[in-house]
Image (tube, rainbow, N blue to C red; front, side, top):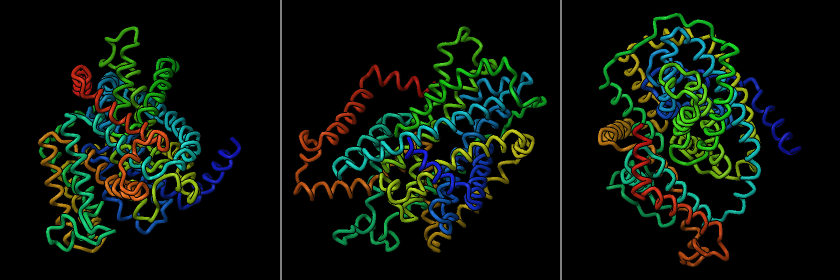
Length: 503
């Protein structure tokens, strides 16, 4: 306990410097902005802004990128409530009751409940990170190459099961990401792999090129084909602070949503995205009058909004303690850490305590900033919702091209990004979810490295991964991975899974 308090004091010392406060504010503001504007997600935005972070120190860069991620969760609720368009995937559920409340003249109460619930959930989730950080890091220090490889296999299996749509398609995306990760020169043999004689590929596919193409360019193309129709609420927003009756109705859903979102956020794959859906389902199941849901029930806003913010922050736990990204945004964080020469994993806490605890403390600061940014500036966000797509998306493409060119000053990088953009758009049209591919790409190089190390130590014996006497953790992780896949493939479970995602 005393160690945690000492670490937190170190973290606040880092987070409360003028520079890091400013970077946290910029991240939260940009995150709220892209959460408010429909069609632009945190994955695309972080991809675009990655080159900007090159000139920053690692702690400041990650504080800003983290602010963008959880700031987008806050901002998405504004669009969902006022326009009936989810600014973020996690805000889909909020449209059901939030927009109905707005139509009934209670838009301010809905926005205030969402903001206060998110603030509470964010603070509690940050406590989870602080409490679990040290124990998980100590456990991770016991891991060898075999355990790390098995852990990443388990993570990818969870990503397959929790991805939306077909399990087979998600598996194909994971394998494609692993294949992309092998492009380039083999570090041990010096042989080029899958470069097809193109010199630009000898160093491999650049992470920012792939991410910006598949998520930035492809997202623009996908949104251009959607009709530009926005059902902006004409009623007055009204008072922002919920009344005593509203607080009584939403207090328990906020607590349940925080717990559900916090637990699911740790899971690899779509855990953080599933939190709001799970929270809404729970609230509807236990409600005395389920018919109220979809007609302006405040519980349908309070629970899911708390769940999505809690999940967004607990997603940092496996990243910072084990070095395993649980979703596509965390995969981008791995890319950012690698660019700054930091190896994600348990060494982060021991070798870079300022970075780890500085990020944890900055989340408290960021949550307070978001409360201040969101509620008083609602009028400005409403004005921004009137920005036409035809002006917004060309500007996004221009920033994408400038950002990607600035990484290596290579015009070919821009061409590759455009190519991956078309590829990502094709994947979306064919019903493939690109996020598992990015996870596979990020983990691919780490998996190959740990696989080789484990085989060298065991003199080429694959038995080292299932050696129950010397490697019980590795065996346990692989068993969990196989069980997860096997259970998901059972006809009854598979049918239920499809129904849940469809709903």
